[in-house]
Image 1 (tube, rainbow over the protein chains, first blue to last red):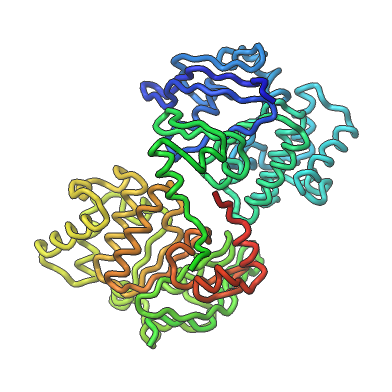
Image 2 (cartoon, each protein chain N blue to C red; image 1 turned 90 degrees about the vertical axis):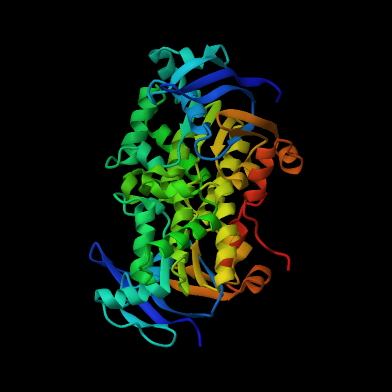
Length: 262
Length: 254
């Protein structure tokens, strides 16, 4: 449990002269869900994108390291990156439908992804996909495989995105606002499904979200980001019960609560 | 007499040659100074409901009564009359301001045409006092909407809507695009202002926790139908409908 899987030190990144992520350090342990919360513009997504592929997102790096096993993620070559991402590290975004080709069937897209990583085993792979679909509570997996993203609802597409991300059983799973575009009832279901998957697959996860409720439900540890810096990082229970930084306290107070007492 | 009464309104859209029943016989009434929350998930008809009440669309059947009478006519004069008693605030404030006009111009226009205040001096006085009430600096008035942040722009939209002293305020997901800290601030200001001026509010939101924190009454909608309505206290402590229970259960609390 205590083994460190990802170690980020003094990461500094931004766009042009704008520094968006400022000297951020944190580590993610094996089998841990690590949350990064904050408001819009605090740099949480840029931080995650810098770990995924800074060049593709036009992010400039000004320093720092991010070690995943022996790989330094910030200075990977293209071929190393291709090898690592998808199989060892995978990600899911707010709107999964937009990460897929809109008018090609999921069957073709899954096949292509698996082939490009050398994991394609014909019917056995299809069985595996259907198995993961059932784990994320997608009924009628065969019908979904033959559908295109535009034919499914937002919640279903998001589940397919999650299924794709965990298909090759990655060690590290990066999720950027995976439930934010969903209705509240669907959000809760997807949160529960992600937790179930995590229990079964025992991988590590970085969850970036603005929703304190989702973070509190899922994460073992939470880092609060404000203006590019991590201002507080603690175990979830500790953060909720005794936060020290004034910004964290303000953030927690502002979360609307169900008024049950009269 | 109720400020607003909605009787059995239904509305159907046609999309891809299929009929979509966006509203199915929805009824309720709104008293003076009352804040009513409308909660539901996407596609439940909550925004359609506001469009019907505000007159942007006309219902297929049913009546909407303001002070006991049906607002008549579609011409400029009758629309102005309608919007002087009823104002609407939308999710994206940038879209509700004219992008080519400064904030102050939009506000002056509202005062001139909807509240009948013509004197520039008086307009200025009212605008300044409301800017103070929503905690915005005066110099923001000379900016264009795109030069304000989302939260600032939404507060300006609230000020603009409330300064003409409407009786009814319709809010459509007004804080959904904002961060929680900004949301908290805006809701406090809105609540104080509407209580002061005894404005009746319909507050549409997908967030039942937010609605429960400041509305007097709640209506829960599902697939175009009202599944439950009642006092916030009753709905929170003893929800009747299964769907309301599911909604309450879906709130991820800290």
